[in-house]
Amino acid sequence: MSEEQGFYKLSWITKIGFGLGDCAQNLIYQVIAGYVMFYYSDVYVLGGDRTKSAGIASTLLLVARIIDVIWDPFVGAWVDKHNPRWGKYRSYLVVAGIPLSIVSLLCFSGFTATSTGVSRGVNLGFAIVSYILLQMLYTVVNVPYGAINASLTRDTHEVTELTSTRMVCANIGGFFVWTLMPVVLAIFANSKKPWGMVLFNFIGSIPGIFFMPAVPYVKRAIGKKNMFYSLGVIGIIGFAMIYFISRSVDVLDDHNFGIVAANFVKSVGFGIVTGYMWAIVPEVISYAEYTTGRRIAGIVNALTGMFYKAGNAIGGAIPGYVLAMTKYKAPEASGDDGNTMSREPSAWFKTVLIYSIIGIILLVFCFTQTKERIVMDEKEAKNVKFTDLFVEFVRNGPLRVIALYFITAFTCMCCHNSSIAFLYGMGGQVESAKEGIRWSVAVIPIILNIVMMIIISFYSLTDEKIDEINRENEKRLQKADSA
Image (cartoon, rainbow, N blue to C red; front, top):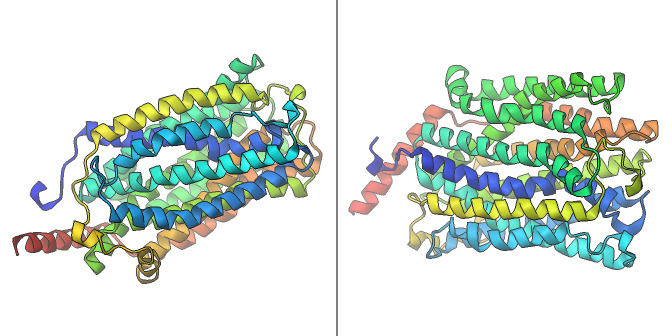
């Protein structure tokens, strides 16, 4: 198919520019998804009670993210209905990206941490307002950003390469968060670097950065579903290794290379499959266009956003509730042993400031390198309604499968990631709390990986079917233009 028919070939600067948008969001949001549970529990001490802060934090995360789930449909309908002069989707990278960076700083400011003598009510209220606002702003950036993916080209192979590039960039962002952030925090806090945790996260970052480019070729060789199944099994093996190794040896030992190897295996499977799953979203958008005649990219991305936010909500809350039930107690800040993240509030603020500045610079670069080519007709856009999200969910079978996959995958991801800091900080905890941490970081993710494999077995859109759908969509568009 020719480029004039929508099957555009994308330059590498476009692919990398688009991918850096995800890198930017990860520099901001991975801090939230991965560390806010630890921050609220052990640094901010939400509610002012070290024996209850984990449970209170879980409730805040759950409620705030449920609000965000409700917010997603409104954002998706708004995005599809409007055409800002800087671009239908890319405008929001700047318009909402700058406020997002500012609010992320407020969220980790620590200005009302209990250690300052501020009342518990102010402590809790500031956290609630800043965290909910942060989630809402992230949605205004992320939903249209996801829609850009489907607006650049219809070519299935190009979309796969675009998604692989995006996920490499996202994993680079994750690398700077998971591997370097503990070191930067330690530098600002003038404390010992947690090298064991740093090595664990560093090795876990390698597959997503170096193996992701091979995904399009692996998919061609063994097929889409077989790739999901194979990576799912590898992920389960890795999680199981983390559990059993953490029971038999001292995780806090900087020379515990067994646990590091286990994380590498986990990331080869689970890390790559959760990166590739974004390539399926444009397929569902094309299917929706095929069956309805409208390319409702914003609505579909809002729906997938609803479910991955729901997964984040559940996965982020699970560790806190598990820790509360297993008698976890947040250590005193003065008791930092150098094995896990620093508990110094000012160090967190300075670190997040650096990450937020870099993030907004990358969002602006993404804005300059992307241009929407395939979008909904303006006449059709005017007819977009909020209720279209629910109508589309009911009638679109592949979308329902992806929605369930997203909620399960992100529950697993957030549960595991939120527990890593606790895994490396469990020295001095009672045995029941240590086991609770192991369940959050490994056992619960194993169960969720099995569920993910069952869900994806119901996905019906093969690459051949998607190519056929895209060709038909282009024929219809060409016919409409010539009429």
